[in-house]
Amino acid sequence: MDDLSLLVDLHREGKRQGPGGDDETRLAITLSGLSGRTGLKIADIGCGTGASTLVLAKALDASVTAVDFLPDFLHDLDITAEHQDLGKKITTLSASMDALPFEEQSFDAIWSEGAIYNIGFANGIKAWRRFLKPDGILAVSELTWLTQARPAELEQHWNREYPEVNTASAKMAILEGSGFSPMGYFALPIRCWLDNYYRPMQVRFPAFLARNGNSEAAAAIVAAEEIEIDLYERHSAFVSYGYYVARRTAD
Image (cartoon, rainbow, N blue to C red):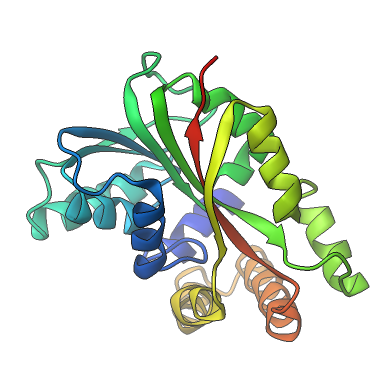
């Protein structure tokens, strides 16, 4: 297996492919002001196996287009949606988030939890803005510094892995400069990282290694994840995902 196939194998059985939580998705919905509206059209971009997609479909009167470039994740979401009687509300689409086949101003809201980093925060919000109706809602979670000063090893790690990591105030400024008015912000709590993401992934490590013959490539992926987990456990006061909810402003 190549590295991408190994990562899919590791994360496919996880409810979430990154830090997050159902309660946090619901809080973002509350901040968005979408509750109570009817006939909404929402795109959930970089949805993975659909944790946030399912919450959106349950909480809102909406048709949700769940987008990911990995068909295996979407296949699993289709099955889960049918089991939860949400198949009529969720449509899956295999596409790259930087080449979305949507018409301009076709969505009331665009969601993306822990995925916009794949094309960069600034690039993503600018590219996706045109798909939102006037006053449409953007809700994204994004790696965010919680303090101005950080431990050097943490800063070096995340600056290497994701150079766009920054403070919430810097992210808000990008939103404001890209045609959005911020409506709400909060940082994901520790349980969204440990209980909902890291601990379930650690439980899957032994079976993942066994399935892949304890290969050097599989072991390297596990080792890299363990380094990231250790860094977070020791430095959780300094970094998290920030959840940003904003409204598209007039051109």
